[in-house]
Length: 310
Ligand code: HSE
Image 1 (cartoon, rainbow, N blue to C red):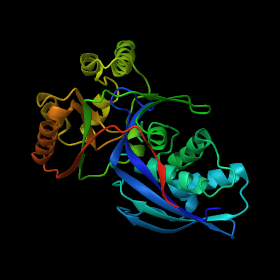
Image 2 (image 1 turned 135 degrees about the vertical axis):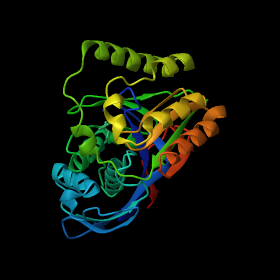
Image 3 (image 1 turned 90 degrees about the vertical axis):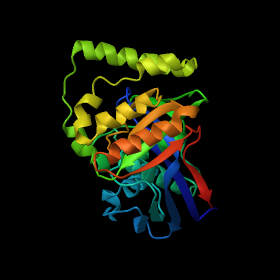
């Protein structure tokens, strides 16, 4: 029986522009690691948080990874304890799904210590309890891709259905993270409660077009549908230079460009041959608004969280 396991969970781009709270994809280049050790003393303890950690709470009930494993302990009535070390590779409040990745890595590692491991959909629900601690709301668009990998659609919250959507192989995701923080709670709090009928029609058409374009390898359909008419216009003012960054990405050949999750990270999808130019344009546009940035070009890999050391 294993007693000491480390798991990795990748960063994620939630919403992917047009799928607010229901669509997300992995960014394999960045992620969090959580080491979990079995202990005879019942309960969950966090012994260390390192990496790009900032001021994260160490009390398990206030920490996304700690709360997620607590939810697992309560549900499965586990009578032994877990000691956790968290290594943050995802910048805090960046819009890259850091709270979700810590929760997912924690439940994947803890699960590997069980004689009877829980099925993946239960892990999703435990990790969601961690996400609620961080953002104040239940949404799975970071958790599901981080756990399952690839581009993932989640339908439902209490009994979610999770569907992996194929991504055309010629596409890359360009990620540009400006050096500023934007809290998910704050970025959710500004959103209007109502949507006009015409925006509703456009958004549903775009989401359907985007997904059908992914299934049929139709890049023109993806490009024409890659337009969030509801959330992006409300949040873009929270990100200095967003309009210029998007313009730079599109004029360099991107299929689409929008806010990653709640921001401030901005992402673009492009064909592989334009990805470097898209990245350069986006980084330069942020720089001209006084913001330095980190950047990545990533394939949308089809795998999610996994045990990396046991
Ligand atoms: N769908 C969420 C949002 C992702 O945009 O608020 C943030 O975690």
